Image 1 (cartoon, one colour):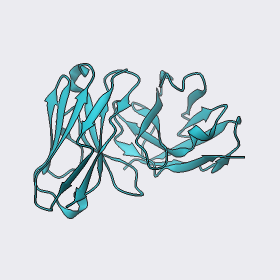
Image 2 (tube, chains in turn orange, green):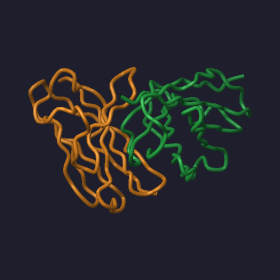
Image 3 (cartoon, chains in turn red, yellow):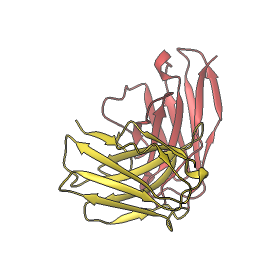
Image 4 (cartoon, chains in turn brown, cyan):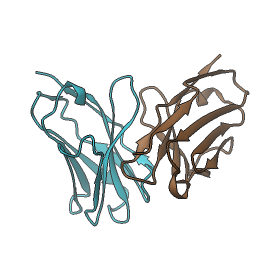
Length: 108
Length: 116
């Protein structure tokens, strides 16, 4: 099973700042089948990025994904108030699919 | 616009079977993978398993001995059964779906509590 480690656990930033979230896999993620989700309190997660770098439908372009192999990054170029949430990565290459532990982006 | 809605069993007794159904609207079940994911209160996400309309299924090995995912194309539904539940199975259960294995669309989630 592929273990995903997200860092940092919590990111304290101000609106307008840049957020950089990391997701590291215990083994290479085939074809970069790595997804990122955003979850706000009381809501279901929402797909942001698929295949490491493809934005899902309706996702603003301030969200971008990059990386390959075992190291992946989600970048939010300028934080908007609605971006403060928990972010999860998920590898979709090998069964069982696995999630990282999440990164909470909180208002500083 | 695809929408998913989980049934809501609410409370399940220890050692019994948890049964959930997800009703899909806005598209047929064909060509998609349909997934169950759970989230214990205050914790992260756990993938339970998925199914394709071809009835090919994949399960989390940690739950494989207790879980069955099935699909009913005539009702546009897919289902989860988890037997021999314990308090550790208390969680928010989500159904989800997508053209690939990632979850493009999600239900709102249903809280299942295991308690006598």
